Image 1: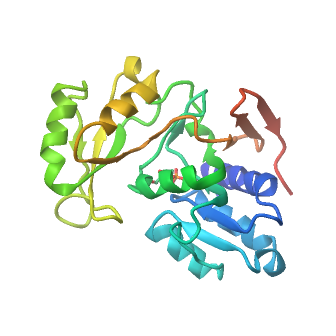
Image 2: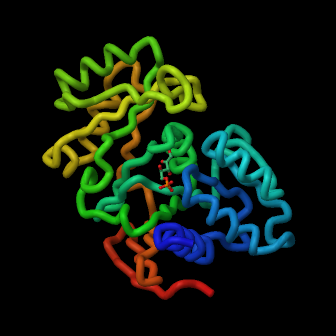
Image 3: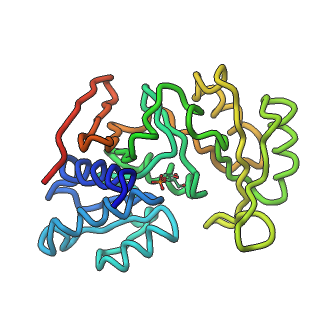
Length: 249
Ligand SMILES: O=C(CO)[C@H](O)[C@H](O)COP(=O)(O)O
């Protein structure tokens, strides 16, 4: 396993060990390439621990993951309060604001983050930054209703200061990426000045009619777990505390 994969696994295993407890019965499962390690560790807790638990997916990928792992599936309309949601991130800043939506799942991801009593991020060391937009340069993912995409792009280019905002195009399919909700995705890069204050730019984007959700999650997480190259895990907490912990066994 390469260093990035093992860092993802370290973060995921440590987060599950610390936050998925026997009393937790409704668990949100995010999207991306780190989350399978979350599910792997939850399965390792055993059949008895997982009996009676319900797992809520943030999209097609995590739904398949839950089902193929033999875990119980539910949805957020049945369970609007979730004990704990664990999810990946494209980048997390020093205040625990993060960019999400690299996998175009950020609408459901934000609903599950907001529904959760505890929202936990898991990622490899590359995502641990002081300011958003440091390593993840493709921009802020924005889900838009299809008929409004050109209008929203125009607003981003000329009003909100993202001249390079583009419609995300599909690979191995002609045309745009279509989200699990049937919408399009715009990626809008902003300069450092704007990304230093992600809440303001998030609110401005959200106000554009046609925007369904913005992939900026501002101060929603209780903690972010980053697997490091040296086998340790950095945990950043919402109160500013930072722990450096050894890998789980
Ligand atoms: O927001 C997401 C999908 O919409 C993912 O959580 C994010 O892209 C991180 O993915 P990975 O764990 O593969 O780095």
